Amino acid sequence: YFLGNVVLSVIVFTAMFTAYTYLADTLEHIALIPAGQVGWWLMGFGIVGLAGNWLGGYFVARNPLNVTLIALLVLALGIAATTPLALHHGWLVVALAVWGLANTALYPICQVRVMQSATHAQALAGTLNVSMANAGIGLGAVIGGAVIQHWGLATIGYVAAFIALVGAAMIPFVARLKAKDASA
Image (cartoon, rainbow, N blue to C red):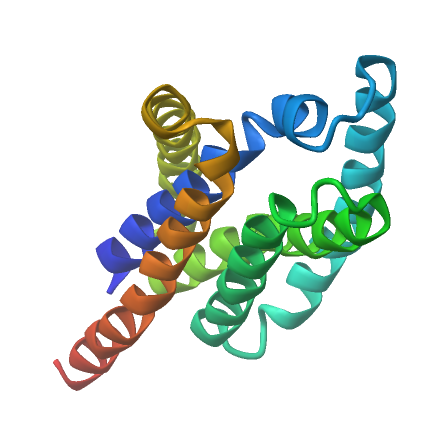
């Protein structure tokens, strides 16, 4: 169960950073935001992220796997909506807000989920989760770069959303691992 949660964190962070690593480029080249305004858009994304972080921390205690599932589905929706809404800046703000809320909600969700799955070594589990999150961040950047090279910047959100959906599809399997651990 613990290892399933760690692998899930890698997938979650890979999904998040496949697109987020290139968000500034997406804003400038797909949404046609002037270069001098991109920083303000990123700051808005970060401000929305404060609320997402709070929401993730608030809801994770209820059921970490279910909250991960919901956040991944919302993340996939927000990221995937960014490209088709890119030239409609009012709607783009909504898509980015959805993405930003889910993105930053997943930080505390993943940390708590992994730590709770390791009942006897929670500090080690937390450390391992951060290390694996960093691996996911790096993997996401590499995947994002490859996507841009082969299919173009406009497809990056769809690939990131697909990775988020892979993570969502993995959750029932991780839940079964928990049931096996409980019966052992």
